[in-house]
Length: 149
Image (cartoon, rainbow, N blue to C red; front, side):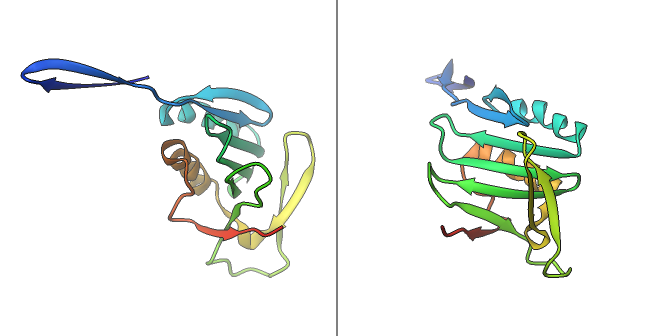
């Protein structure tokens, strides 16, 4: 719930806005968050471990964003709905070997590898999660690639 105070016809007035909570799933543990501040409260838990799987779902379940984290490296996936191939981040400044990969571990223990050229920094990923919390959109400063089934 968000309160906004202002004056109407010279009288103090308060308007209550309903803020939709989102579900944060952090390494398999679910939390309800209703603000960027609430999200920031949980984000330090990511630095407790080298690997993290983070999902943030809008109140209706879609759209959703996922961040896979390996220390300072991260990769994001944005899904518009169930069955969507979605979008994933790319690093246009990557200058390493084309076959380089970064490993990630999901909360169920599964090990995945993704091309290193898809890597963004963990700081960028956390900023993108905060943007999603506010706008339910992909962070416009990142490079996104539309996946195809």
